[in-house]
Image (cartoon, rainbow, N blue to C red; front, top):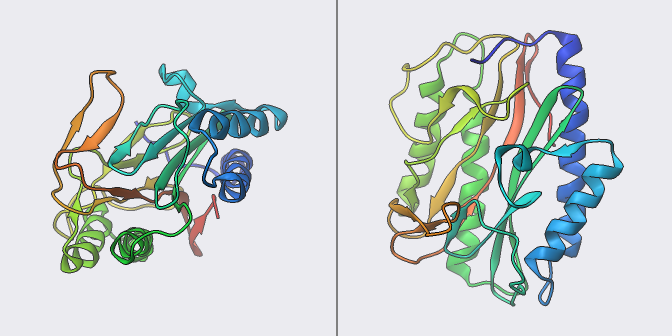
Length: 246
C-alpha cells in the first residue's frame, strides 16, 4: 500500500533516485555498438554498490542489476552476452535501494543510426511521459495521467502496452496505486501531496499485445516489432511535481 511521504522521507528517497540518475548518465555514454548487455549490467551495478545502495530488481529475484531490453523486448530483458548493434534500441530500467527507499527510472537509448520511424517511437514515448506528468497535480486523479498519455500516443499510430503499468514507489519497489498508460480521465485514486509515482509509458511500434518468453522474465511484443520505454520517479508536493530521477 502506498503511503504519503513526509519531507524527510522524500529527501531519503531522493538519494536513491540520484543514484539511478547517475547510472543512466553513465549508461548513455557507454551504450554503443559492440558493448554487451552483461557489460551494461556490470557498469550499473558497480555504480550502485559504490554509492552504498543495492540494485532493487535483485531483491525481486531478477537475475541482474538492471533490465536491459533490446528492440522487440518491452521490459525485463535479461543482461545477456548480446552485443549491441548499430540501429538497435536499448531500454534500460534501473532501480536502486538506499535509506529504506527505492528510486526507479527507465530510458530507451538509440544505438548508432536508427530509422526515422524508430526514432519517432522513442521520442513519442518520452514525450508521452511529460504529457502524463502535467496531470500529476493536487486534486486530480490517476486516470488523468493515464488518459493524457494515451491521448498523446495513439494519434501517432503506436500501441500502448496495457498488460503492465506504472506504480507507486517508496519503501517497496512496487506500491499502489497502479498507473496505467491508458484510460479515462477523472477516474482512479485521488492525487495527494506526498504521493510518489513511477509513471512509465511502454509503447510499441505495432500492436499493444505482448507475451512472456519461456525464461519467465522477458516480455516481448506479440508481433515482433520494436518497443520503447520511459520512466521517472516523481513526488507531488504543495509546489507541484518534483521529478526525483531527473
